[in-house]
Picture 1 (cartoon, rainbow, N blue to C red):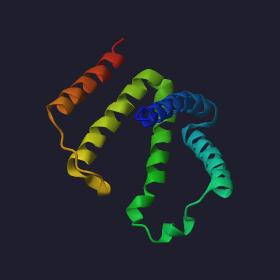
Picture 2: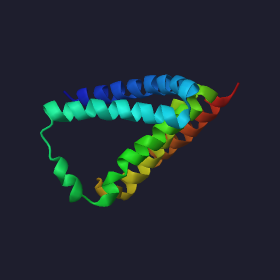
Picture 3: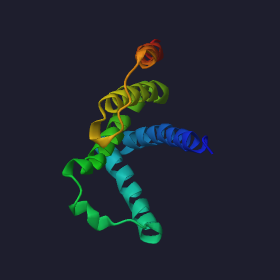
Length: 144
């Protein structure tokens, strides 16, 4: 069962790459911000029905959580807006390499310092080498 969570994460990555291309095409037809709005509206509607029929949590807790924990939606909107703008210009693969590099670098820093209430996992030499290789891959994907 150790493989299930990495596999689910992989599926999430596949979904993000497909979403980037779809939203990039939508942005060409409707405009960048409009495409991001359409994408989030449809996603919000889908989540509304999932919560309505399957939700077991407490939406009322929104008033008692630290306010910084509500920034996830804004960060998601920023991400989708950036994808709508960037993917049509440089393509899905270079965009995803840059996104993954950003995720892993910031993820390593969040882990290293235990930010946002996370577990502290120090950055080591292997992670530093991986970050250098990530930057190299971003550069290689940009070469014509």
